[in-house]
Length: 131
Image 1 (cartoon, rainbow, N blue to C red):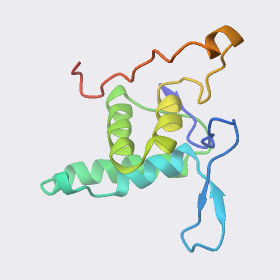
Image 2 (image 1 turned 135 degrees about the vertical axis):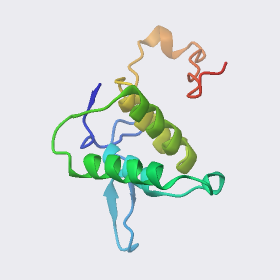
Image 3 (image 1 turned 90 degrees about the vertical axis):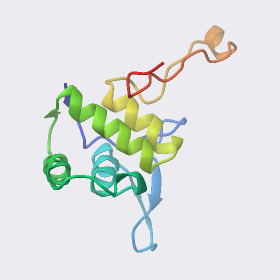
C-alpha cells in the first residue's frame, strides 16, 4: 500500500492538529510522518530486549518516512508495526487520524443527517489478530 506521510493530521473539525513545538515557543501542524517517525524512534518499557536488528529496521523505516516527498510503498507488516507503535506512544487525538491514513480511510467521516442521530457502531480492528 502507498501512503502519503506528508499529510497533516486533522481533528473532528477538519482542521490540522496543532501541537507545541519542541522548544515550547510555538505550535506546528503534525503530519503522519512526524507521528510515525516519533513512534518508530521511541523505546517502550516492554521492549527492553528488542534486538539490534529490529532497532535497525525501525531506524531504516523512520528514515524512509522522514525523507518522503511523495507516497511511500509499505508492506502490510510495516503498516502493522506503525499502528502498534503509534498506539503505544500517543492518545486517541493522534492515533485516530494516523490509523485512518495508514488504513487508507478518511480522517473525518462524513455523516448524513440521519446517521448523525444514530449511536456509533464502529469498533477498531485488533492489530494483533485477536478478537
